[in-house]
Image 1 (cartoon, one colour):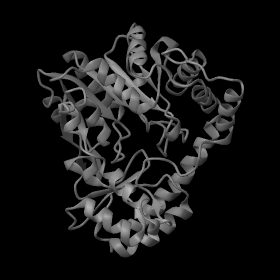
Image 2 (cartoon, helix red, strand yellow; image 1 turned 45 degrees about the vertical axis):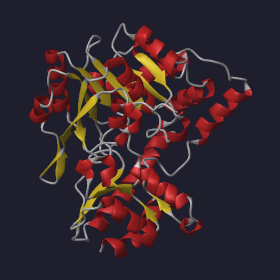
Image 3 (cartoon, helix red, strand yellow; image 1 turned 90 degrees about the horizontal axis):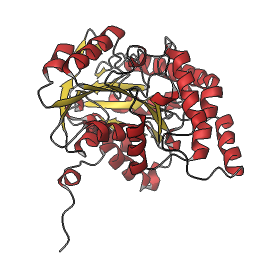
Length: 387
């Protein structure tokens, strides 16, 4: 008789976004599908970055690398953050990870034990909850609220949700799926609260560069000291269009690198050398590509908002960051059914809001990190359904 899998595995819920995508992949009738359900840019990684990887492979860079990452990448990341944020991080504060998702996983392994509480805002990317639940931790969700057409987080409500069993607060800003951005004052309040209470803060800043009116969104990086209980998660996926490369990093407190190196050793050992060297190239040579991408995505964002403004049944609050439209249709209570209707009738793939938790029911997420011409075609297909 086969024994059961762990309780944490058995209660995991499937990704509703993947369910719809798998349905589309299995049918030839969706050959002209416009996929806007995943959070990734529509262009491949810049050629200069791809060539850096190819050169590394041609040199035979196929061996194990240090657990914390190759020194050239860690130094490049420290220099990148220091130049962008005005900080003074050294390489001992940088841990390279095999994706931002793995950085979140390592953070959970480091901070949470079964029975601990993690407090975070919602709706949010479903992996944020699942990673903590796999540790046997309980996720306490504090809903974002609409205020004068923009999303906001009631900080007192967040603090009140922290009980004796709370080990960590997780903040994702700019946020997936809403595009909400926590301002500098809010970041200082949360940081001060964590210091007073002895609670860890996990800052998921993978969309930090995806803003349209300044070089970067507010960051915890320029507010923390070496000893603060803060882990900052970041990724190459969004900023440098490297979703498939699976490359990220953690900014960690001083004096903890040895422990995090051991966690990496026992999680995935290391990240491939060629991928890391591509990351070095992205940091040094990727800014022009990022600026070009942001300009394209902003045009698509504006086109989308202008179109949605003509639909009285569609409610799309303004997003201050990331590359999503998070919108609701009047009278819709089953977002998965609506996403399915849109898939079949319009051949446009959107993410159902319920995939991001119960707070997302009735909403849909559309990724506008695409060329304006593709966005225009998608909107032409969507209009008859949304009307």
